[in-house]
Image (cartoon, rainbow, N blue to C red; front, side):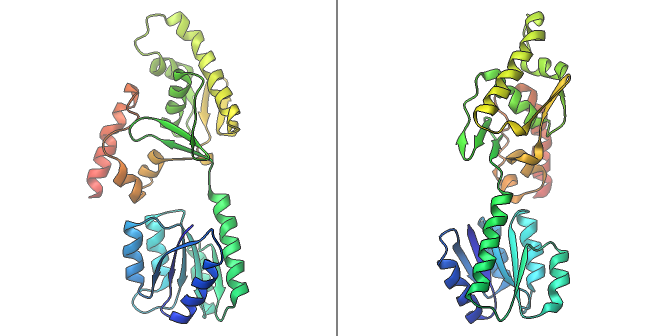
Amino acid sequence: MRTILVDDMALDMQLLELKCADMPDFEIVGKFTDPMEAEAYAQKHEVDFAMLDIDMPGMNGIELARRLRALRRDIIIVFVTAHPRFAVEAFRMKADYMVFKPFDREDVLDVLERVKLLQSRQKKRVFFHTFGGFEMLVDGKPVRFLSARAKELMALLVYFEGRNVGIHEMIECLYEGSENKTADNTGYRRTIKELADTLRLYNVEEIFVRERGSCRIRREFVSCDYYDFWAGEPEAVARFDGRFLSDYAWAEPAIYRMCEKKRTRR
């Protein structure tokens, strides 16, 4: 877990650093006494977890936390403070935890164990790459679909962002240009079954919902660069280079909207 420590008290930061070093899941990628330097680092590097002092000169830890969350929504924030009066404001901005000074090694160990638990709850098994060609990853490994049409249907469901995709829309997109409409009107059932079977093989069938006349994905169970882009995640916006679901003509209308979105953010 890529971790930064921000505290204007060098001794306190040293204790945090020593305890983090005892736990292999935590990689300290930055130590800062100046909150502005911490923000500048996070703008250019990925950070999973930040332990922040609150009462610091220049910019306090709560303001720094707001800026870090603007850069990455799922960053885990833990405040370290000697002043209980900050507690209400800290939790109002949805900090994940707080530890009070003076603390000892056991206090820090407890915080780090809680952070590991938080990250495990946040982590989603399924990730979709849509910039360029389409790819589905489960636990970081590519999925091999039972057919090309099953893969395209999965891409279409991702494109619809959790909304229901009806039979007519499936046929129009997946069988565009086909001359055998009779076969198309029955073939989509096989495609749906192949997709369901693929997901079952990878034990992620909970992301797929089949309803009468339509199907959809449970967006809350997956991560996707396309979703991160529209949420304004800086990393996703930066990575979009004008390519999106490149193998599927039905996705082309989204490219103009995405290019315009990226242009207006500059």
